[in-house]
Length: 366
Image 1 (cartoon, rainbow, N blue to C red):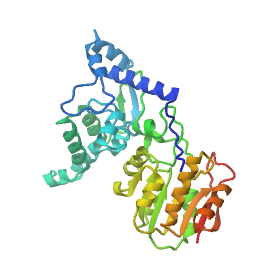
Image 2 (cartoon, rainbow, N blue to C red):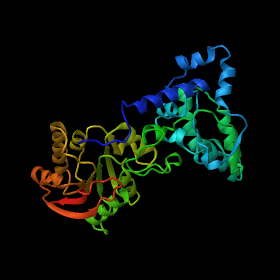
Image 3 (cartoon, rainbow, N blue to C red):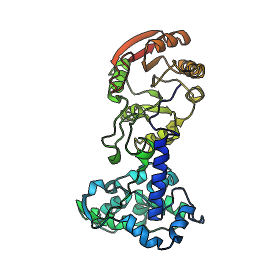
Image 4 (tube, rainbow, N blue to C red):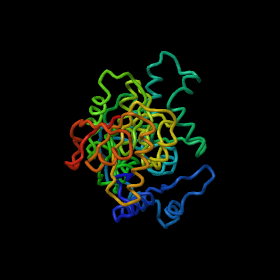
């Protein structure tokens, strides 16, 4: 299966973004890679501290003159623990942090919980909070850290501030989600919609609502919750929707970053999301599924690509009696030849902004 991904690899744009990130980290004295409790700062961070007049120079680069009043909703958690936002999200294992609005973060949530409580929070309440879980990860990775800037902002937001006056840097930077999923700045596109403040306005490649409606039509709108397998690009968006309706969902995505979005942003369970070779992963799954939704089937590439698609279709054929896919005529013929899913129902247009007019949403059944 050919995995279509929007993030450029090995391109000039990628190299320029990497260079800009290094300059940003140098200016702010941050690291761009994970460092544990006992690790020394990176060479870039050490150089930033040793250059003559480094602190004064960094202040000139770091802060524009004056300050700006910004809506609270625009403030993200960003950099922490001497890492920039992208490196912090990688170290903590979720793209959520760094891209998360401070209003939705664990700092503000704990303060709001304390303000709403008629009595001081006890140890059990603190241990059950998202802030305790977040702090435990930070402690385990880097020891005892107090991120004063985040707490001052959190207190202001918990007290009801709608705007804050902030200082701005001269240099821009990517958030974890924009860097890893949308191809950096300027953003290219997402495979599916993701509910994140820093991804608002980013183009979306696939019309997932149309796919959702098509799958429900293929199943029958009164179908009881069952087991769904979703394969291909899309971060498991369809599975997240059906999980809310009580379905048992399993997702196979092309890349680890897609899996992190499925878990960290869409809220799927980590054990239900696999990344890697689709055919091997599907073949290794146990049991049967009421339906399999497969996106991005493309047998028109190299011989190797076609072999991957054939292997995936054969694995799917062992797992279900209903396949819903975005497919063209070549895909239809291949499915009919290599599986027992010979009955085809047209579910309508894909509705993708850049979709080929020859690809339709189709249901394949025995």
